Length: 474
Ligand code: ADP
Ligand code: MG
Image (tube, rainbow, N blue to C red):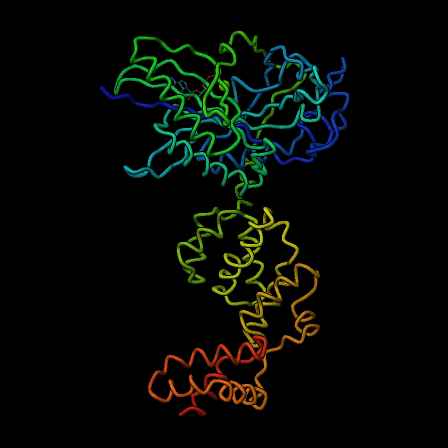
């Protein structure tokens, strides 16, 4: 008999706010330990929380994008547990009335579209972090992350395979980055996933689940789920039973290991935080967020295909990130041809970004500068191959295309006198090929064009070379 896989995902997204959820401390990542930890974050007695209002609009944005409802009167609870990197002894979170509830996303599967229900998304504080091994035999506590705002997005157990999980996660990741809810940086922990996994007989009751914690890459999530499913099936088929617990995925060994027994909600002694008033979210506020909603990736993709005639593939890559599509739209504002703009973005620009392992925000060439380069290709000042060289120099020297074309003398030569001289030289040097051409092997024309190009260091206008050679040889 076969097994059915049941998965529910909890994603913690760190919100892109300048300051923490309940204090004015900066959320800047990568600072020296405990330099981003104010009197509230380290839990000095008597210091009161003050809600960072910016998180509310981000949560509303998520609700709109995931077809969910916004709780009009949302409240905060204290969730108690002891851990060295949690100085308050509780995490401020939401249980009874989370800010976002009852949403869904549609994913593509082999059997067509499938609805993945989102039970809720709630606001909570991140904990600090424990740093092991930097001083031998000791663990250090860094409270820089303590109090960073998180939105935890929780699905119903509607997911039936590792592939479906990844498909849902990629879509969610695109949404939160597109809407500037989170920067989505998985290495830095801005988008972390817990996967709850169980197996059952088709149609039977839900099996006991295990929770795989804090996995920070799509590939590891897929591997961890597949490993865990196989482990559970093996236990059940040999007559054993699954222990409800939290397990840790080890990417080096590609296995999951038991971490701790899973607490029940009542072990956390949740209660309403008496220091925080309920938040009332007005209809006007939700309407205002709706009114400023950007075009979502799929809609923008259709526009790129219909209005600018881009292929499905090209448009799909451009809308993979908001930054990339903004850059593309910025290029178009300088009146460049959409197709050549797309070719450049997907070609030389992407190659450079991959090579440097950076995103387009960090590209040293602005949209205006790249548009300047594209304009010089379009008006035939330079050829496409010279343009590649100019692009590299633009990055190196932080200069405009025109400045580089001028300084390097890269203007395309259209002067027929100069080109004729190169053509004559090539014909004189290659009598054998001239014979071949004259005996009907016209394909050899390409050879002559190539030689002239070489002599001109890429600067001769290919159309002019072609015309001159054909004329001289026939
Ligand atoms: P907790 O608060 O203990 O983490 P929740 O009820 O909030 O528990 O559920 C957490 C996640 O576990 C949700 O995404 C839910 O869909 C998923 N889940 C619940 N039961 C199962 C199960 N039997 N198998 C797989 N996932 C499950
Ligand atoms: Mg949970």
